[in-house]
Image (tube, rainbow, N blue to C red; front, top):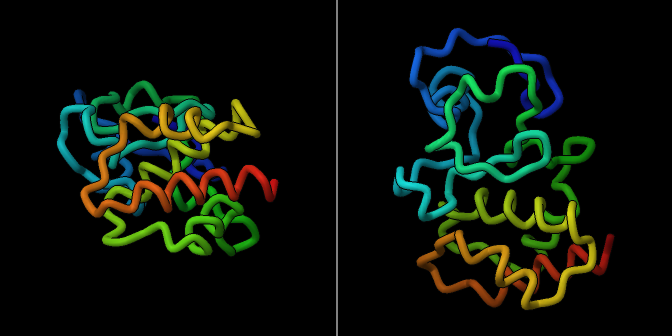
Length: 150
């Protein structure tokens, strides 16, 4: 199966029934997306497929064939954190970081379709991402900051 991963062509022999998360993590060594609940309820494994947020623990690897997959690493710009990633750093929006890649991917999908979201838009978009650290307000501020600075 061939697809683009963070802008680079990749080819992988994915076992039948493999999830996109398992192929990205175990076969391609992509870091960022995390296995959280395995039931599409936490958002830790979110990636972008052709610009749309998908939950990779429940998405078949085969569905990525011929498409473009973006992980957290794919949001970097010239080897540095992308604008959204930098806003998270500036707002100190991370605590443990386990959920963060999924949250940033979800926020990127929001900003791609709505470059100037309201606070309620951000909160609604992030509703499917769980964070146990309690940094939700800083996360929302980071997304709004990235939108302002874009």
